[in-house]
Image 1 (cartoon, chains in turn purple, red):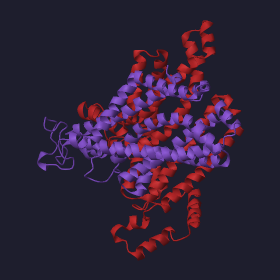
Image 2 (cartoon, each protein chain N blue to C red):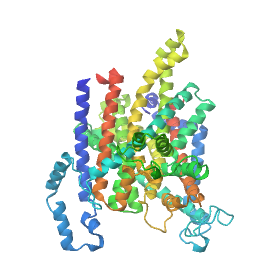
Image 3 (cartoon, each protein chain N blue to C red):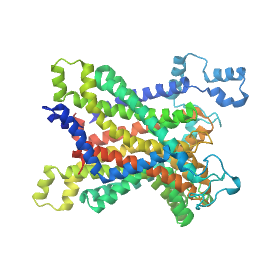
Image 4 (cartoon, rainbow over the protein chains, first blue to last red):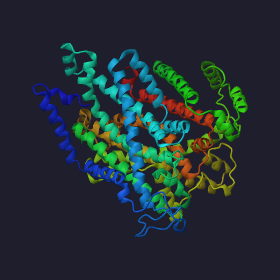
Length: 297
Length: 334
């Protein structure tokens, strides 16, 4: 997608490429929804990092006598069945979602980029085989694949990261391969080839830097889906499986029975998931528009 | 056209084949022993070996795979460890429930998403467009289970307008004939039963349809705006055609194509979403069966269901591709 923008990078490649990114950054900072998204993400990351300072109580310790208390000044979001402070649990839940989401998307990116670069870079039989494998994996809906993997590997945060990451890898591989194939025919690739650059050098120095831009957008949007999917796994009873760890999806399942008597136990973890997902969706859309301004209408 | 169909159908076979291999290896090579899962605490080396022999797990891997494929080709997906029933038998009872839920959600998503997308495209960058953008942003950002519980809380717990649990009211004693709750209700001939099954469908269909709604709205908007900028649309307007006629004959005919592809792709997310939706709303479909099977460590069922879901997804997309080629001759001859 960014191929066209590089066509005027002829005289001053260094400066022009810096300009491309500065332009994109300028457009991004002027994009109000994207900045709102960034604010949501900042809130989410800040909460996760400084959870011990923000949370007024220990998220794992409760007082049974104070079970299911409605929100009050002492317990801003009430208390759960075991009398644990819901606010502290929501705050600590951000840690699980952030760490698991980031690692899962990163893992998916590493696997996807390796496969996509191999397929798009080498072409031929390698490409055919790898793309058939991604066809197969894409045939299973992402969260279902993740459910299957966690069901097999057993519960735990590492397993969830692997499962969600594997589920996203084929999408990243497809995306990278697609843009590599488009870029291979671009003038600058032909120029490098005619100068005698090796295929590996062309792939790594010329094609990859240009092909990675759509992946940045896709990875940002995937963070939103990852947060939702991780919570979904928790909701289905495939969460971290450690009662001391507060996870948003598990908190929802634990409280679903009390929808009538304590709806706030569903409301607050729900809002936390939605706000973080909105943040990454807004930023991802904004990134897409600022990197490729032709998309903005 | 016939050649195109044959080519696409043949192209799907290697994918299915590959899927069966991957799922098979998944089952055999990852840690976890089905014998231990079946026996639990009673596992002794003798009993474990006995179960391995019964399931054929003591034979070489390729023999196991060939056996497994042989069984699959005969339509035998194995039996549940828990109740001993054939997967296909339970599937036949539960699948209609999931189909009804999925079609309800798809009807909601398409029925609302396309008009919303067209509306936003007609007034780009207006407040209407902004509102539609916010709706679709919320659609992809709210998890199904959060939306599901919110809907239940508002419309069932607080307002008492709609029922929250199951596909029908068990007190009406609707006999199960087709296993589709709505058809069964229609067969009773009682308007009350029909109304009851429709009202039970509303909240789950909205919860499950929210993500496809968001995606269909976005694609429709983008696609209509794209076509709107084409020369032939300007020509049509310039020669004085009524706006309505330009919309229907010139824009929508061409704008449909990406929308249809996206609708086909939603089937995968609908089936996966059914797992969450059926759990929230207590529907006895295939989705909630996946969850109970995972909880019971009933691996054969989980594996079979993932394979069946993938087959459904592939078949639906094959049908969509063929429909697409039917609508767009340019694809057929490429």
